[in-house]
Length: 346
Length: 149
Image (spheres, rainbow over the protein chains, first blue to last red):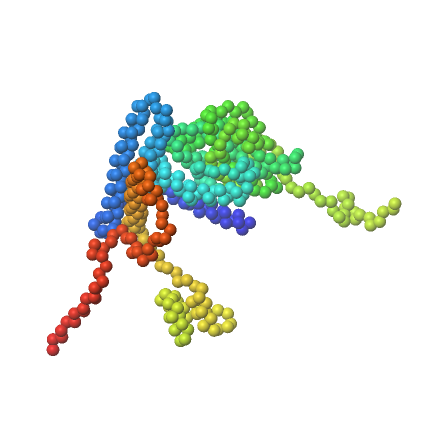
């Protein structure tokens, strides 16, 4: 109970920081005020050095672009593709390193004004994820056993942001209330590729009890395929909805449920998925069947409360199941209520 | 008193000594202050005061740090480039030597077992003094201003 309270506290703190970020982004954008020069000689020298470096890198970039144009013209070269990719990488690297030391770029990044069109901001966001957020995400995913339970452990490449009305899953594994998650969330996958790629987005609940088999089953609560995403369009929208959103409904008498949102890339382009059964869903075989590669994960937890009964009655229109341990036969009293006999006449 | 003499010989930082000398908080029944002082001197590290930078000063500081890192990077790259150039020249020279004379080439790559690197050699520096070491250095004589009496 204590840990649960602690997590609630964490989540509220995360929410407040999110709000702060949002207000920063939506209010009249504060402009960058550079510190005055001719006060601190070290600062002046630093600015001079950074400007010099920037100029040098941009001159190099011009050369690389010329080379790129030349390579593009030469059609009959067998190594043209390799050369092109290498030169393009070099150009992006030069662009990033030219801008990275700029005080204004750093200031904008720190104040939440991140422009994913700029290679330097993309680089900084990626580095932030790799250095800071990824270890925390993996820690929670492994501690709460999302990874061996739903799919094998994988290396997430970018952050998945799940936002419900007024609530967001800032940290994977926080507790939400069933009443807060009735409407579908806004899911965004902060990726770093400029070209549009197709993804499959799904929400899995691996903790639904399976009474027949006396075990747990996975239920797919939301399944979208062929979702086009790029770095400037990170919000999940469009694509084919195979299973429409079903609000999370942790059954009465069960422990917490881990509602997991998975982002899977479709490396071979568009896929055709016929209708699938949401109950007894097998994520591993689904991934294998359609050759998907997992790229991002996030999850939140929920336990039963009165809202679940309402969800069952109004949205699912089913009788609500109630789970519990089987009743124990009393040692001392028979079913009738009389005390059992001590001796039997044989 | 003897304790302070000892700590002085241990050359602890002044801050630590001050902290140790501060009146110990009353803990428990056994009221021997020396124990508390010893514990502080032995186990407690003085906390370093970190400069609290804000706003413009922080921005300046970060810019300077970034520029310093950039400078170090540039220096390292320059040095690496120089070394690479030297290495290339050396290997080209050795190739040339191999073509011209087998005897000289073998002599160049054989290392003598008996000649070792001189330990006493001066450490090579990036910027050696143009004058070398001044063996006849004498400190300047302090000029005492004459008193007007």
